[in-house]
Amino acid sequence: MTRPADLRTAPREELGRVRAVCLDIDETLSTRGKLTADAYSALWDLKNAGFVVIPITGRPAGWCDHFARFWPVDAVVGENGAFTFFMEGGVRRRLDTPAGADAAMLRARLRGLGERIQARFPQAKWASDQAYREFDLAIDFCEDVPRWPEADVDALLRLCADEGAHAKLSSIHVNAWYGDYDKRRGLEHWLASGAPGLSGEVPAWEELLFIGDSPNDEPLFQAFDLSVGVANLTPFLPRLRTAPRWLTQAESGAGFAELARALIAARGGAGRGPGAGPKENG
Image (cartoon, rainbow, N blue to C red):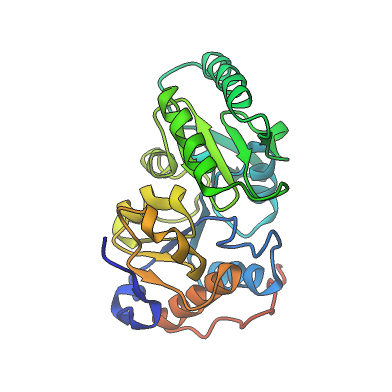
């Protein structure tokens, strides 16, 4: 694996061709579970500078509904690619990613997997947002519980794989699901469907950039020529076969804001600055 270069060395002409920013949420946009003023302003700065903004997250449908409605974004790919939410005519709409099986069958298989997880790991707790999920199980290994030993996390990933489930490690959860999709395929399906909800021209693949922080973002580090990790990705680099091209100096939301400033500068705009907040509409 080639180690990421410092984002400060990224050629201005390459960053200048970016039209759309795809981003993970937990510990990429957020910082220790909070959305800082700097990071939220960076979202608005990108939108006000004309970028398409697309969060791609393992978070549940219930949360993605909120993100799509209230954040300055064009679409939200949720539950590691199971669906995309977007606004159209003031109404929140959805596009499901083909999963190769009906939803009832997928949920039945997940229930069985959950029983086997709890039998093997009596300490296992579902993530606090599990009630709002439609297509996956999220096992909390450090968000609201004491951090699991790394060996137990690895054993959980192996159990899910042995049961035929997809399992991805985020910065806080192990997400497990059945169905032939991941973050990359969820995004590809939305784009191939004409990017519903997007006003204006659909960006070409080479005009997209992705920023993330953990191993469950690897499908997108692999997919994009233009990819960035926030600095807190560093401990996970040994787990990756494909790393992002660049790494920010700052961690989490501050790293995301660092990228936003670089992109806006490469486009030739000054942005609105940290903490500026959204523009008034109308």
